[in-house]
Amino acid sequence: MTYQGRFKVWRGDAEGGGLVDYEVDVHEGEVVLDIVHRIQATTAPDLAVRWNCKAGKCGSCSAEINGRPRLMCMTRMSVFDPAETITVTPMRAFPVLRDLVTDVSYNYTKAREVPSFVPPPGVKAGEYRMMQEDVNRVQEFRKCIECFLCQNTCHVVRDHEENKQVFAGPRFLMRIAELDMHPLDAAEETGTDRKRGAREEHGLGYCNITKCCTEVCPEHIRITDNALIPLKERVVDRSYDPLVWLGNRIGRRSR
Image (cartoon, rainbow, N blue to C red; front, side, top):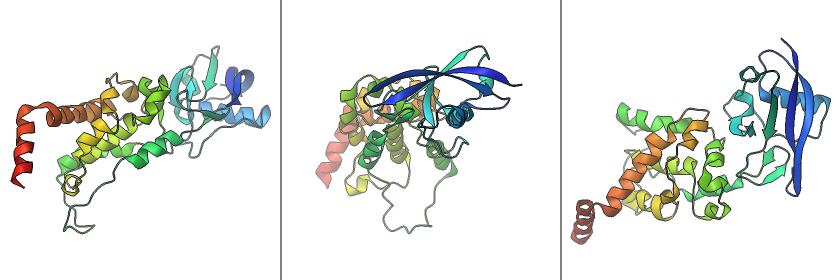
């Protein structure tokens, strides 16, 4: 089935812009990214859009479709009524470069601030051994495709520009949780306290677990339930549980 679809696409740059109306053919089985490409090919060759794989694995084509953060390549036109006007806008949490392309460098800055995996001493690469249960626990988080939709929908980032200096956002708090859960990570043995860092350097306390990040994740990672809440629990134990506090004090004194 082919029909004439109506679209409103945001056009502009850092100086400003607005929605522009387009009417374009929609064919059976197409996704929103197909339509954006058709608009480029037929009406607006200067329309800027970031994309790469068109298979939901590169995370490049993130945008907001009818106000909801989505991947354009994974949003099928069949989910919309043919009579509906589809609005496509850039991610709101990040500065616009042009049209649907935003500056997501904030995320790469935060990624560099997270201390990397610390190999266990005395164990060579290729000799790591883990229980399958531990592998399964952290493997979910490795499915992240860096689309930054969770970062975009997090109201701590989206609605409060000033928080970006002190808040890593759900994607990178999830990375900290993944490393903290990793049974072979030897960060603490080298003086890196991931729990303290999550609280004091990466703004874990700003997260109020609304689960909006989980709701928009195209990989269906349970960011809130399986990463952020467990990380919060461990941070609270480390910081406020009197028995843990006493044990840490005794441990430090005995060394």
